[in-house]
Image 1 (cartoon, rainbow, N blue to C red):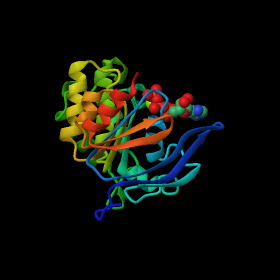
Image 2 (cartoon, helix red, strand yellow; image 1 turned 90 degrees about the vertical axis):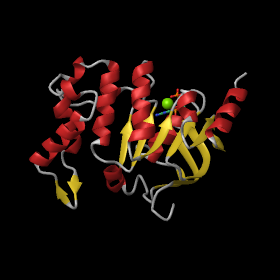
Image 3 (cartoon, rainbow, N blue to C red; image 1 turned 180 degrees about the vertical axis):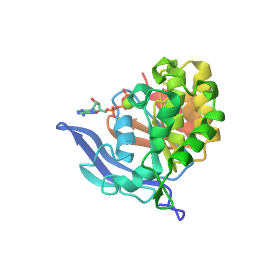
Image 4 (cartoon, rainbow, N blue to C red; image 1 turned 90 degrees about the horizontal axis):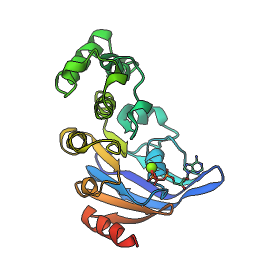
Length: 236
Ligand SMILES: Nc1ncnc2c1ncn2[C@@H]1O[C@H](COP(=O)(O)OP(=O)(O)OP(=O)(O)O)[C@@H](O)[C@H]1O
Ligand SMILES: [Mg+2]
């Protein structure tokens, strides 16, 4: 962990799921504003992302995310971390855009107390007004296009002011324009740190550092250009 409490540290982590070793011997120290996670299908990237978010537990070894043990201190982590899935429908729960954003803030605490309804409404309006969904506040979430839904899912995470966003292929279903919009928010606009699992190697190159997985092992960590080049060279 860094002096300011940020950073991701794994020590000799294995993850077994349903009797399969999905991650093996993963060790790393990552301290960057944005971290790309790349590698072939089934290499363990999503499992790594879920491990950081406390959604799967290590079978062996140690995980610390911004100084927090994601499993033992799940609640503390949840206050600081946001997770974005590639399929936004997994994340949208309320009927309208406004209600969905408000739902993200329900039960949240600021300075040790719950946010009042008026505070939640004010924050929703501020986030909406500043977004490409400004005129869709009362639209049913299911009526939005895939790209707009992904944007809403991301706004639902950002409205909670996370320290760290973990995004698992957030642009997988998006066209060029929406990919650009989401990428700009993740990489340039939001103040949070980012772990970005992606098959989009141009996006990976825009991160500050990168890690590469192969068959459940973290095989490389370094500047994205080098890690992407090695990945390309590894494909027959
Ligand atoms: N719950 C589970 N039970 C058993 N095996 C699992 C489970 N979840 C994942 N796996 C296996 O672990 C391996 C890694 O999966 P993971 O989803 O982490 O890969 P990935 O790198 O994200 O792949 P993709 O690029 O296709 O999303 C795969 O072989 C997968 O089948
Ligand atoms: Mg995956």
